[in-house]
Structures are given as C-alpha cells and as structure tokens.
Length: 148
Image (cartoon, rainbow, N blue to C red; front, side, top):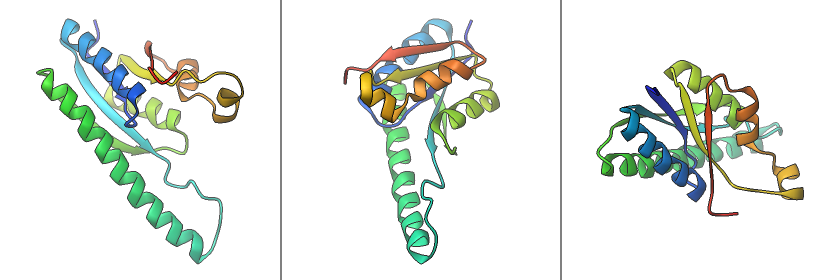
C-alpha cells in the first residue's frame, strides 16, 4: 500500500515518536523510509559583515544538528532491521522542504510528529504539521508527541 514513507526528523522526541510509528508501518507494508531534515539557509534579515559571520556560524550549527538528528533516526531504523535513505534539504520554511522532498522522493505517505502546542504558543510559533496537512498531496499520519 505504501511504498515510500517520508519522515521529517528534527531531533525532538515528537519526531522520534513519529519515526517509531513509521517503522511499524514500514514493516507492515514492506515500505522504504526516507528521512529528511530541513534547514532554512537564510534565517537572518540583516546585512553587512556581522550578518555574514552570523550566517556562517548558523549554517555550521544547523548542519551539525541536522546530521545528529538524522544519525539518531537512522540508528532507530537500523535497530528495527530496516534501511533508509536520508537528506538534509534547504527550505525557507520547514513545510516547504518537507513537501518538496515528498515529491522528489516519491513519498506516498508522510509520517510526522506534532508537538501538541495550543493557544498563544501555537499562534506565535505556528504549526509545520498543520501546514503540511493543508498542502500535502499524499496522506499524512500525525503522531502526537509526548511533550504536550
């Protein structure tokens, strides 16, 4: 039923909970997993030398965090006896990177976590999961995080 499952990972417990569910689904359907971490390459709106230095430091830290998150996720997949592909992708907004990756990797299911934010916190921080749900062209399985 599902051949390619996309799982966005950001290192959070919520994402790891979603990954564990994706592993269960992949085992049931003989699916392939594709893990993705999205980095916004231009998070700063400033200009000048301070901007350039801050940008370089940010990209170095963001890339390191992405690689750590993907490594941890890959260990979970491997421990379950499965294999996965993974990528760090650029995206001005996380949902854009997730949706673009879903299209390019041929995902027919996206499994992702939800941090369970409510009220003003959700309003201020937004919801990547909500925006993926709105625009995805394939089914999305949302796994509620334990952080709520």
